[in-house]
Image (cartoon, rainbow, N blue to C red; front, side, top):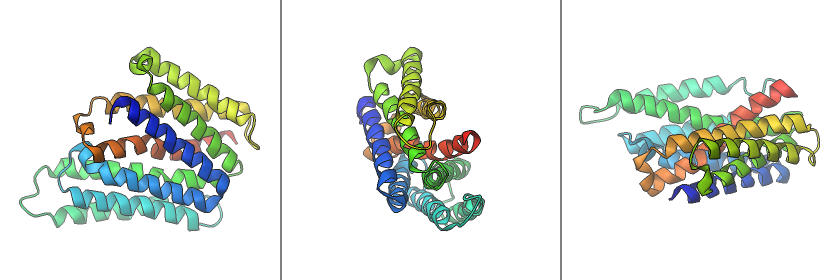
Length: 244
């Protein structure tokens, strides 16, 4: 994928997350699970990690476990069981490394890369938690719209440098504020804040991934387009808790 196609695909995924939030909580769970799958499928090629299959399995189990635990946890805090998912996933990552054959080359790189994948995949459960917050679907839609606009702006040729990235952040914040003005339970200032956060994620990850030669591969590109949406989920939940 080119930079433009990746940015557009990220915007489409963010839009799907927003649509799922209005269709119902189970749809948000399904959308989060899809994000986990997309991240897991290409995480090892994206970071050029050894033990491709083991890394994919660990990241997938961690992400789906986080989504499931968040959905089935009753009462507050809704993410109180998420550290257990991460802890068990880290144990699984070490077990996967112990089962490797052939001398376990690049062991430290493999463990650290898998750990990063666990964190990114589990972050997708933030969309489920945000949907269960006081603002609910309105906050999900507001932040997803901000991310979609920021990602779409990142697809433009002008967004290649720092000035363009700043433009993406500003327009992401403006889109969040605009969306907040038409959805219930979210104030424009809150929408502006989550939009700016989503824009920062989109801009920062564009800078990061533009330097990754592995993005020439299809699986790596698939993971790259899903990472900004997955990471934004947990960040929006945290920001929403602070502001609401």
